[in-house]
Length: 68
Image (cartoon, rainbow, N blue to C red; front, side):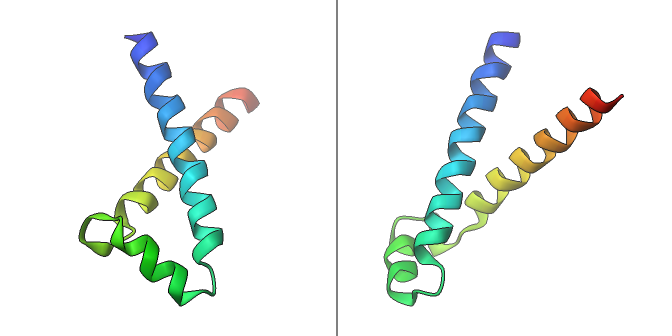
């Protein structure tokens, strides 16, 4: 169980870093945004945003645990 959660978190971290990189590539560039949308389900960034939120929540959890 712990091994699976560790692997899941590794995938979340990789996904969030990838989402961040894609965000920088498409920032202020409509041509790159259109290209990126072709590879996304429904042409939306919803899944990428969801992964970033998961990572953000994980970081908040680890910070609050380490401070306590």
